[in-house]
Amino acid sequence: MQIMTHAEEPTVDWQQLSPLLDDAMQELGERDRQAVLLRYFSGQTFAEIGSRLGVTEEAARKRVARALDRLRLLLTSRGVSSTTAALGLILANQAVTAAPAIVSNAVVGAVVNTTAGVGGITAALLEFMAMTKTQLGIVGALAGLCALITVSQYRSVASRRSELANLQQENGRLASQLVAMEKQVVALRAADTRRSHLASAKLFAEETETQRMEQIRRTGALDQTYAGLFRRLKLAPVQLAQLKELLLERQSREADIRRALQEQGVAAEEVSHALFAKLKAVATDEVDGRIRALLGADGFSRFSAYASSEGKHQLYEELAVHLRDTDSPLTDEQVDRLVALTAAARVAQFPDRDAVSVEQYNLPIPDEVVQEASKFLSSRQLDVLRQLKAVREGMVQMIAMNRASVSGSRPIVGPPVDKRSSSQKTGEVMP
Image (cartoon, rainbow, N blue to C red):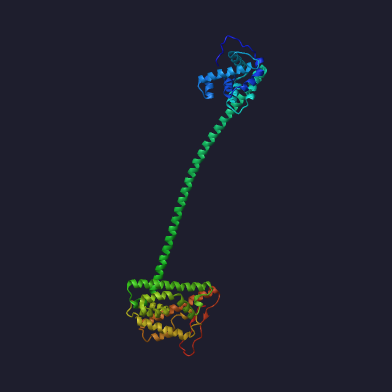
């Protein structure tokens, strides 16, 4: 603060001036009032005042001088005469004596805050200037207490900042762990997907292999069942392969019929031969149409004749296989005659085809067939036929016994012997 060095003494004391100062300050202009407060009650330099008021240091010096002179004139009009220098000196001395630093800071804040009341600010200053030493001591103690509280608050804030930093560090560590765990989860999922794919591929391979083996088995059975037909049709390899595909599809349709009957609680063998033939014709009609397109009318006629008695053809094709490498092989004509004799014997044995079951209609070789076959088979061929007949009868007996043991019943005997021919015998019928 600048020190006043004028020689003349103030012409008025503070006790005379203080009651009138508040009213005089209110009559000053706002910027003049701010200049007086900042200079004499806050003790700021002209440079600081200029910074506060937004002017240069020299401009601030002139404004303080003009404001102090106007304040002097206002006090003179109220009966307090003084020079400008004396007024500035008494204001500066009383402000330094009465107001501590905390009050000076409050004055600066009040000056800058344009919403504060002028009378209230000046009154507060005068009130502080009039304080006794005891009061000033209390104010100093309060200021020290505020300082202690500020230090405590600063330490608390510092502690909170330290805790926040620790929490942020811990959060970063947990975030890193989370990223690592997410990577592990992704890796585990990828491994699980690979295992699932490998298991699916293995299962697919196993299913494919099973299907391939089943296809081989069915194709082999097809070659045995339709060997005679394949020989007679004399198809090209491509046509033969197409025919085999169609025949396998035809067998699948027949298997569907058996499965449907089984779902209804009826065994296919228990259904009448005529009914089963009708069901089979309906199920295979579309496939038969494609076979007709492949073979032509003549070829399809041969196929139909063969298919209608495929069980019997299969039986005698087995006989042909046994005789194939002997000096008495079985010819296709001999096979056809054996099939025709067997069909006639079945008709004679079971005149009502609607009443006879599929199983009954496919009984082993009848005795009269063997008798008639002796007229066109060689002795070697006839011996093999008798052996085949015995094997088939044994198989039928064994199947009947197994079924009887499972169902707890005994085999059912077929229809009685036709008394018109003593040579006919009754075969055993499966339950």
